[in-house]
Length: 79
Image: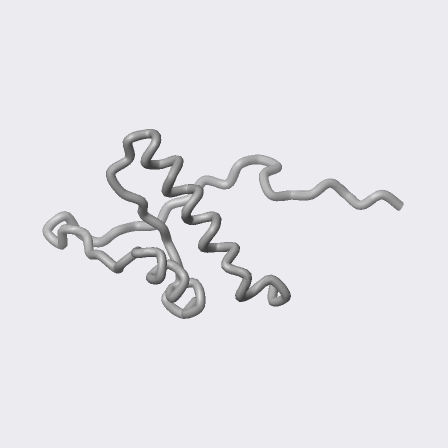
């Protein structure tokens, strides 16, 4: 929400996720962001994230999804 921009909420969340990942022995964090989302890209870069490429000999990355029944749908509002 625009009213919360600039409060470094993303920074706090990323630091918390990184701490949990380290506790669990993870070797890296990856995330997905749209190239036109410049403010998010800057926020991620400030936290040490950098663009990377996959091994081109294995082909291009594909995005897949599975929509779960009822997931993301709110119940009807009460009258």
